[in-house]
Amino acid sequence: MSKPVPDPDFDLTPWKQMVTALYDLLGSGHEIVLHDLRLMPNTLVAVSGDLTGRKIGAPMTDLLLAKLSSGKEEDSLSYSTRSEDGRLLRCSTVFIRDANGVPVGCLCLNKDMTHLLSARDALDKLINDYRDDENGLDEAQTEVFPHNVDNLQDSLVKKSIAKVGIPVDLMKKEQKKAIVAELQDSGFFLIRDSVDRLAAELDVTRFTIYNYLKELENEKIVKDRKDHSSF
Image 1 (cartoon, rainbow, N blue to C red):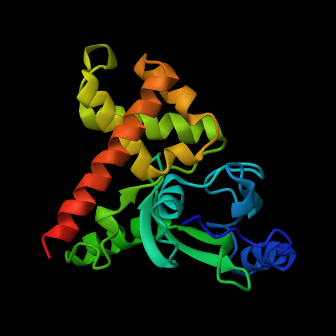
Image 2: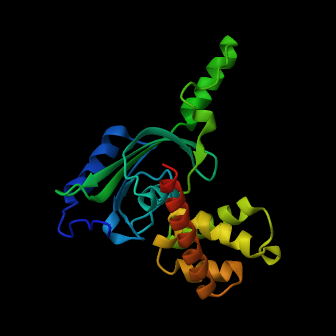
């Protein structure tokens, strides 16, 4: 079954105005971003604030890409993440849907928690009562805020290769196939020219990457059949 297509005529202009209005209200230390999901991969169409240094035309983050790839297009409110330079951010991601409920855009709000946490730490030391953050801030995962598609692709590939823990020139088929599986789950192959990019990184042909993807799909079909037969 094909994935529903978002309304091409849906107007995001009011949401662009909201980006500016929210930033004017919240002020520095915040960043408001609007993505048009119909413009993959260069989805960023409005931004106020410079926490991540992104500009119009930048791609979405790796976490948002993974959400879209998995079909789990659910709002995420007040979650914690870390920028690549280690800053702690509190974020909210809200999907904008057309009349049929299909995600068309995404409004993202980011708040830099660094100064607030520094002040908290100073107070904790003064009263000798340091406690771990109760909202899980210290365990936040790292999120990539790319400035362009190349940044996003590089980050996803490097993360997958590092997870395998073996230099590419020493990898066997199964390790390279594991990287393809990891990248497929992350939404990497939703990006244009991703197959050619990965083939160059793994020193294989683009047809090899397609073969890995086909093998993974066949393995998934077999697993699904076994799972259903167990009931």
